[in-house]
Length: 384
Image (tube, rainbow, N blue to C red; front, side, top):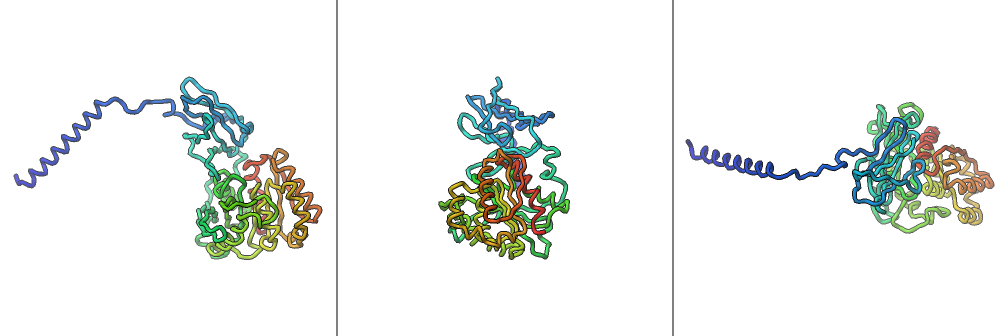
């Protein structure tokens, strides 16, 4: 036998002996994982009667609650501890929709570890779940052509930082030759640029509307309305809000340089909810020549700001360009919407100044239960 072959055989025997030794050690050790109810736990569980069960394994906890945008979800509901250490609660029966929730374990907001679906916000994440049904067909994930949602990082010269926004492009955008209109879609206070495509389900709503031939192809830009620079987003006019400066000086120019969008007034629309609704109004009313369609959801100026508008900015409200918009669309989530009275007061001021608008109410209060519905209502009106 050649020396080289003998050497290889010796090495192989050493490896085999090491493997057997480690195998015996492993067999001699007791099981390293202790089985718990958490191993087979599921949350949420959807019951046939429309109820939803949330569960979390927290054997050492003394108090677990849940809050969310489901009926009875504010301020919170208590979970009940089972002898196994699993805490559970039954919600509903619920109307089919997309719901968000936050678990709280002994005073600490806790992500449901058994549910990977989430809504990103300014200060963290919340769980969400979809209860399927006829009522949510318009936002369902269907076998239709789907657009793309891109995370875009852009330089904000006005703020001196790099910022993030989400941009939806419709199916087939990569091969399109023509320029598309653009909708700037703003979120509310506490949320961020991801909210419209997580809990808002905006991309799926748009995909379905396009597949049904109910809307024109468009690009949808969803920027971040909160900035690190102090300001007053709910005040009168864009000069108090750093986001407005970022929007006008950085976001619009960036989008029109990097995407195939129409650069004129007829090809731009702006919409926003709650805080984003005020930001929408502050940008559009002060710059009415920039947009052809303006949408304000679940929003309204507070009484002191309304007084400031009337006394200090009467000329803004009297601009004839406002009534040249193709659509000025205002919506609310019904009387339970926390912005309901502010909105009524604001519309009274618009009436007083001869500003024309369309108004609608949908159920859902001040939540995405209403705003998803609003989105599917107003998008088909744009750029017609």
